[in-house]
Image (spheres, rainbow, N blue to C red):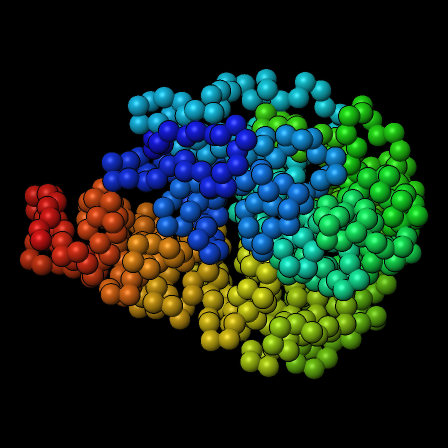
Length: 612
């Protein structure tokens, strides 16, 4: 682990951005202990999933400085800007204790400090983070927890989370906030969601509902699904969770029921549920509390075929349930569980019942009724039509044997005039005027990457189906003039190459995956001088392709002698950007860099030196 500068947490924790560490040339030798598994830049921030000495951590950094960013607890109760790391409502917002958001910031700071080694350059524990690492994580967790399978829920308020720590404390599932209303998304969602999955947890997305007269349930369901809230029967994905509870912004939306009548609220929830089911094939789970449900829906029993995630704090068992449910599926029983003092949930059933909830669209809630179709399922092919361009392509690629039967009719209204139709074997066909019709397999890593990128709103529409390679697979997507090639291998997971960027063009010239290999990160900007980079892996070799306005795109072979010298000098801040690839000159291998340096390596003496 690399050493960090001194970390001081103000008593009120009102600083929105807190520097925890910056990679310096002196620290580069230790960099190999931390591997970036995936990363996503949005504006000036980079959300990352890293593995450090076997520990899986999602974290947030300033793109320009590499400093760790914390959410500002002083913004609790405020509505955030889209993608912001501070502000916004969370599950059980109405019941959170006064210091809840301070505890989240402290937990993020401790995790970030532990990721960085937990000490400053002098070997001292950063101020405000004393005792960050407990020899026994369970020792500082709540002394009591209800019977059941443990889990948690997280949001943009937790900018650094150790998923390994939570797993070691028994958490086996996680709900991650995806979205709020129809315009707010969690910019940390992808890395948090992937982090939970990477340690083996079941993971799902939740949506904080903001029901208003001009934002229908269907509109918010679409926004939720388009921002990662979908579901597939892959045995890993929890059903999307509709968080519908007390209005967190009374100055904006009125009383606790958003100024809706009870009948209007029931209709809004039905609108959300129907749209979610039409797009995913199953009803969402519902998170609420019994008193809000009584006051704002008239204690309706209309949704007791939906799994219930109940909020009830400060009791040894829930005292009252929403009408129609006799018990809960999930119970959020505290906002100060685990060693991290965060939300703790339990699933009431057995491990086999939890797996059934994860993969069975006809799952029967523990305290409710079975959803329609669970006993006698209508044959989808007799109920829905497959026609037009989607029908032609569906039949040409294998029809029901390959994709199953349709679970819905075609539905339009997508960006750029697109249309989609879902099928029972986890595939959905997408059509647009520019791309024709192609399937996306939501049961595979590439399909899940497409979902995490907000479906067609991210990478665009598929222009091929998923295709196998000798060592992996790929699928191409198009959004306007941008071509995104999602590559997968067992060693790197799924990452996208922007084929028409400078970096993507250099990767293609190298021979695609046969040259630099498969991408192991996304393309990331924010480097000095407006530069960008992407890392590729080919066997044991790592190629970091860097681009700048003056040098174009060139690779650094990070595990070669020249690459190690460049890294030790401070990456692009030292010798500059690569101005050439490595090339042979007599018995030497050389590489030129933008600040006038040339790094030499002798194949005879095995010595490395630098000239200018």
